[in-house]
Image 1 (tube, helix red, strand yellow):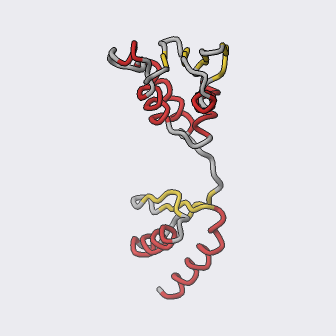
Image 2: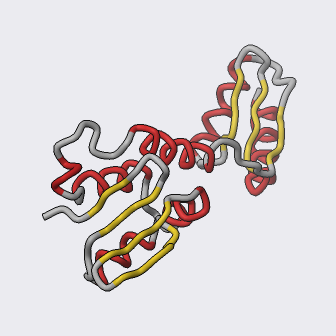
Length: 159
C-alpha cells in the first residue's frame, strides 16, 4: 500500500510511522515536520544532492516516489508531478556537468600513425582525457605523464 504524496511545490507527505521508510525519505528530502503518523519533507537541491552523493540516482528517487505513491495520487498521471521529476533529474545533471582535473596536453605529433599509437597507449592504461585527430592533440591525466613521456621517447627512437 502506498503512502507518499509529492506536490508541485516539492513538498513530500508520507503517511507512515515506519523508521525504515522515514530513513529512506530522509536520504533525499529535508525533514520539515514529524507527527505520529505523518512525515512532511521538502525536496530541495541540497537534500537531493545529498542523496545523489550517497549513490542514489535521480531515476531511483523518482521511481521510489512513484512506486510508493498514496492510492489517492496513484490514479493520476503522472503520479509524480513532471516539474518535480524534471527538477530532480536537472539537479543530478548539474552535479556532473563539468569536472576539473589536472592533465597534460601532447601535440605536434609527426604523423597520424604516431598520434594513434600514443592515443591507444593512453586509452589502454585508462589515462586518456581527450584526443582530437585533426589537430593531433591528446590530453592525459597528469598521473600518467611520466609513463607517457617514456612511451613517446621510445616511439620516436623506433621511427
